[in-house]
Image (tube, rainbow, N blue to C red; front, side):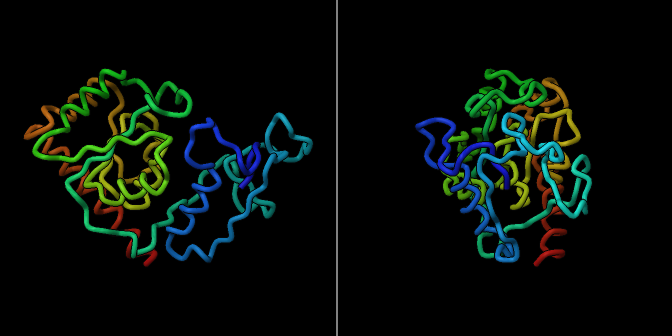
Length: 229
């Protein structure tokens, strides 16, 4: 992994841990994690401000073997190990762009803060525990909350790959196809009207939509378990 900063970099002094600490802890949660050796290159010359190597350009991935085209896409499934799957609780996990470390791209935030507040109010029905995460949530806590969640509602970012690797039912407001690549089990809506309509009254009107989320997520996680376990 190439980083434009040093090992001890914090985005903000109040952050509970570095991104390196988060990554190394998460690496231990994966199935057959010892098959992958994780190394870090700090203050890498792949980044524009310090790029002294004209033959390398910043990309999401780069292979000296040229086995993959860095402008394309690769299969990026990697399920968590069986022992970290636990029974779900009557819990909803949510995160919004409001408490991100920096403003996400416009297509990730076409809902207003009031819209997110309304969704949260709609989802606090029938005894659900609703947990809101931010980018400052310690990784162990974020992992535990998603691990125990019945389903997740969020914008496209932050903790969404943990949701993917648990195969949790997931809703994301997004019009971009990359959302389905990042989280194949997702149900997504491309605009504010369809998003708010999806949650309906948060109760009986939402129930069939929640069922749709759960059916799609089960299909995805069953495929991963059969393929990798």
